[in-house]
Every structure is written in C-alpha cells, then in structure tokens.
Length: 111
Ligand code: SF4
Picture 1 (cartoon, rainbow, N blue to C red):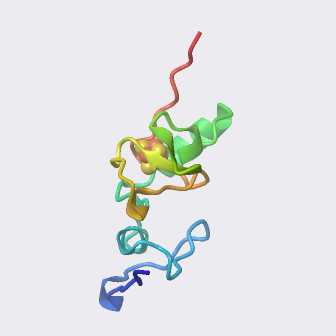
Picture 2: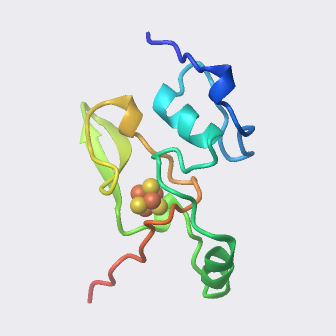
C-alpha cells in the first residue's frame, strides 16, 4: 500500500471539514485540498454561485454534476469525474458529497 507523503512547507491551509486526509488519501488530492482547491485540482465553485444554486434547490456537489460518472469494476462501483479524467486508479476516485468545483454543470434533463 502506498503511503501519503506531504511536504509540510507546501501546506498552506488546513483540511476543510468535508475532506479528511488519511493515509489512504492519494497525495495529489491531499495537496490540492491543502492549497484550497477541489481534490481534483479545480477551483471550488464560488460562494455566490453556490447560494444561487441552493435557492434554486440544487445542491452543488459532485453528485449533482453532469460530469459525475459511475464506473463498475469487478462488482464494485467507483465514482469518477469526466472532466478530471477516468482511470482505474485511486487518484481519480471522487466522492459524491464533495462540494462542486468551478467546472460543475447541471445535468441535462432527458425527456
Ligand atoms: S466537474 Fe463535476 S464531478 Fe467533476 S469534480 Fe467538478 S463538480 Fe465534481
């Protein structure tokens, strides 16, 4: 198992309450979070836009994003982001509850 090695001098922020860094966290995701970015390296969706979407009844999270994907591999389901790239590796796994990044888009309604 690969361990996470962080350069403490690169850490400019504390982890936010919605993301806990553990020894299982891919180093790339931990680094992005500690730099105030979304774990996938994108900027976080701005507060004003989040409030506007909340008023419209949309929870701006990865789960409600048009780019959210479910990948099934060996009877297990992994959540992925089409914008961040889809691999079979842990570094591209996302969590449905993560707050939306700046690339969030509303899902297209199918009729
Ligand atoms: S594009 Fe969508 S699914 Fe991908 S990280 Fe951003 S909010 Fe999450």
